[in-house]
Length: 519
Image 1: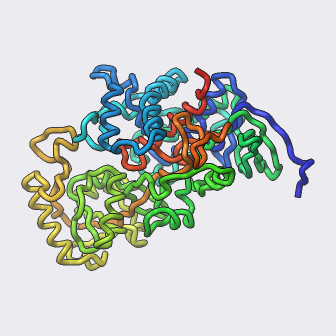
Image 2: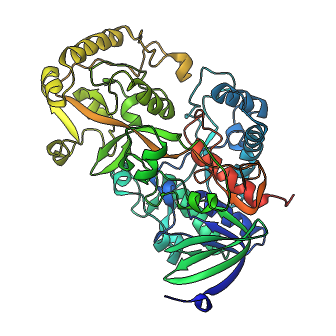
Image 3: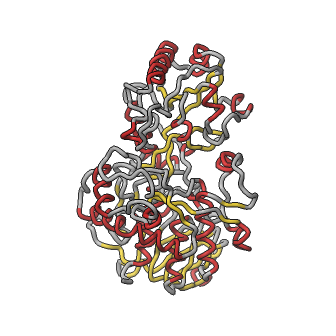
């Protein structure tokens, strides 16, 4: 064991703990401002949870959305957030929301000025289009593709999109070395950071936060087995929450729960929460998560959002009863699965599909029309020639399932879901004669897959202020310590405004931490 005299000593202006999208943005932005920056990442590669997703970031008010359309306004964004989340319960949360609304456009401008090929997704609307202030598109942004080879030697440090996600994208016509979605955003930010002189310490684990007079002055790190002390003016915690830790999930999240249901990075075990609370940091909303309906394939969670939106399908509980509009937002659907389970078991629920759905719509990691024989043999998905047989094979109540299908098919024939209003124009922003999200379930073979209330990460975490500074329970600031949502608590604990809200607020917090007290 090395003794105290064996410890190496390094100095920096900023230490970023975590090499995900938010951490990389913070590092690149700080370096651009002249700071000496070290990123400490416990895994072998950079990327984290962002590489497991589509890279969509909700940045309302971005100028990209204003091209060719009516510009977004601060008032509309604030009105929409108040409608979705309710009024903030305290001044600190109100200040954080205001900071997000004010800073989101700046983050999009910074990304563009840093040569990240950003574009607004004009066809992706807010989650609650029937609420005041909502927009049918333009608030979500996404990075364009990048050839991984431009990273040079740094390419080896990039987390590749997981096998599950790669399989889902394999049917798209993309060049071999192209990074897309979340991997693309991470690749661009990694390239900007490292090319401009940011030091990237991979396979390095933070072991403590160094304090002096109630202020964080650095960290100690286990780097390749060598204890190293980094003295720094600021420390930014940006390595996610505890979604991958089964014990913490069982302690804080609704039950049942399982670490295999998350798409968050495997390293999200809450270690930074433990270190920060150990020096007095406060926490909040630990029972909340970024809910996402998922299926399990080869032991990994994969979103079934596209499948839930497709016609010729419906979601049922153990009694075979449909209980929700399947096109509700991921966050709403996950919470409602738990709420419904208080009466009838809905964890897991079952997505029921006919063969037209399976032939035309992606399901989790599988392309349309492609269902691995292994998946059927392993019980990941059930196939049957009749609905009777499907009920028997899945254990669903036969009468309940058959009755639900008959009722659903009647709705599909009329184009109106009288029970849960699936596909209603006020919710989709699209007025059409035919309801595109409805379709009869009547063409065999029939399919069923278990759907779990998975997540893209936890929403609870450290309490922070409008500048991303970590706070104690008494509201005082822990000097020198900052945190991004994931490690910090989200401002969206009571709801989700849009796809991409998690990534968007993390990028904004990273930017706020870097620019704090500079303007």
